[in-house]
Amino acid sequence: MLDMSLTHSLAFDSMKLMQFFAGVEALYPGVALEDWFIEHSTDGRETLRSAVSHLMRFLGPHAAKG
Image (cartoon, rainbow, N blue to C red):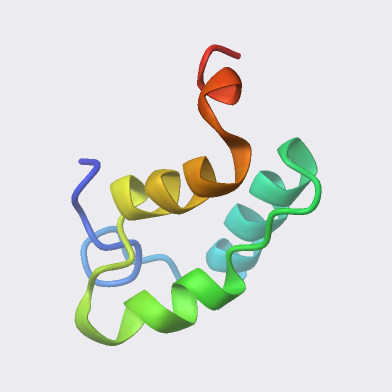
């Protein structure tokens, strides 16, 4: 499931994407996913695994422990 495209496989529409982005931004202020999505969405690379990898670049290893 982590490698499924948000839009192609999981059928996220624009409203669901906005909710996803808002939820991530509420949990991790200062991190935005819009640029990541624009870069990865054209060929189905906007997966949950890709989103987590993107977030980890900003959050560092201490955030993964909760």
